Amino acid sequence: MSLEGRLEDLGLADIFQIISLSKRSGVLTIIRKEGTGRLVFNRGMLIYGSSDSVSRLGYTLVKKGLVTTEELEKALRLQKTGGMKLPVGAILEKTGAIAKGVLEEELRNHLVEVVRDFLNWESGSFHFELGDPVANDLTLEEGLNLDFLMMEASRRQDEYERTQAEQQNTLPPAPENEASGAEATVPPGGTSEGGLPSLEDSQGAAANAPEKTTYRKDLALLTSMIEELSGPASGSEITLLVLRFASEVMNRAIIFLVRSDDILGLGQFGLQVRDESADEKIREVQIPLNEPSLFREVIAKKSSYKGGLAQEKWHRYFLDQIGGGWPKEVFLAPLLNGSEVIALLYGDNLPHQTPIPETEGLEAFVRVAGFAFGKAKLERKLQETKQKGPG
Image (tube, rainbow, N blue to C red; front, side):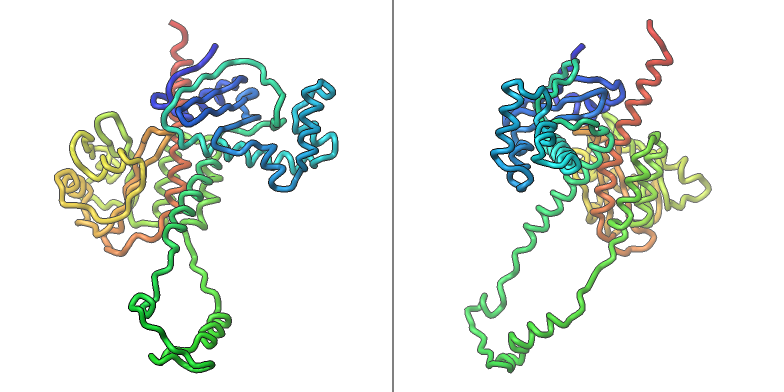
């Protein structure tokens, strides 16, 4: 049996779920214009991974100073000449080049990094061929659970994107006197002509000033919430976890199920609806995706949004349905399963008009929840297929 197709039709998360749930062994090859990748599985666990976009593990070990070039080349020679019928990693360990614990930790990090890279591959072809894994490279003996792997890779991708954004915003503005071409004269130990403290005084004050730390509730909650999500969970349980996390950041929130032509209310917290259950009311809210709206835009771009809400037809309909007035600021985040948006989170701070705080932690959780949501959906389909039976 083999599984093949295009990433545009079946994303990496879906492929992983199929391999994990069926506990298959084999090799997954992914090919795109920019390069190729290869993942080896043993009974549904990932034991090896490589990507043209990620440095090979042997090179990383040498670069980190964990093994020498000579030790790596010796291990490769022993394997190639048949002196030791073992994976390269096992040879490195047996020859005393690296400790087993250190090697396994580096292997885990490498596999997570390879999968993180693959998460950005939205196009290309894949081919999964069943078969016993061939242990001829640096492989992880125990293997990595695919649920953990996708969650950790998603978390690292969020960290990477946040770091990139912070680096782009760290260029300091030019000082006013530099921009105007004027030079400030600062006498030693005194003040500048404008009455500002001298450089020496400023440096001394900065050195003695207490360091300020800002408590971020969204980031503080992230680890514990992901741990709750890592266990077996149904779609309804995942929905409740997302809403619970959102309730720590905003006054009210709604999760929509994303369908081919529209979005449909799935769950909520914080809504105040007269003479009717808020849960029942939100399940009646239906917004088409063939007409302009911020909902459609976020789904198309597959990225979060925080800002104002324009006075448009479907925005007015939505806010009329849920009540509370017109918010100054809203938050929307897609729940992604691979490249597919399967649900959408909306939130605001009505009835108050306070700004929505930082949301990086919530966005990271939503990303992981998307994968868990997709896994639960696939498990439900497989269970339904088993119950129907053959014919």
